Image (tube, rainbow, N blue to C red):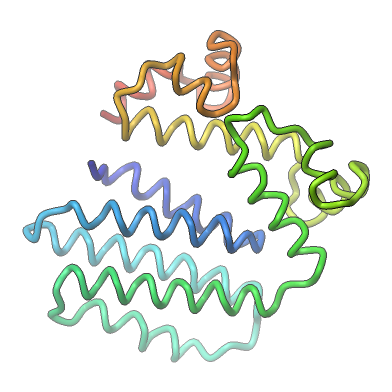
Length: 218
């Protein structure tokens, strides 16, 4: 099931992940988005091209911010391919290849601190349903909680606590739109055992209850 409005939100999320050098998360979400696009009929080719352009433009903008002095002409050449008469499969494969090359460039420009923060983000995503804590993440990365929280805020502008909540809410939004799971199951899937507390956190972040959000985007 492919939803245009939700796709734009996902592209925005991917750009945000890339901007804080979370290339693992960005690659994972970009791959999932491109896979979902495969379900769209050939009659929607223009929409697919538009979404792929948006994804790559967002990624190139982030790359140009993180790695100043690059040749923008290379970006134009990469984007022009999408406007040619290619099949949807060719477009999606090419988009994935270009996106991964952008992520590679971000990786090569990353410092050891950035890589540590990237690993912390990946642990949050991987263990989201398990009630992941900052202490457990720090232990896995073999650093102190104080050091982890300090460099995380320095790199992202968010506290670890804020990031964990934001990641849970974003995953819940995706599940509400792309699945028919009841709210209590989604609550558990994103790490909240108390569905009422989950609803409170979700409403605080989005201004809508989970049910209202699902109805609005379905």
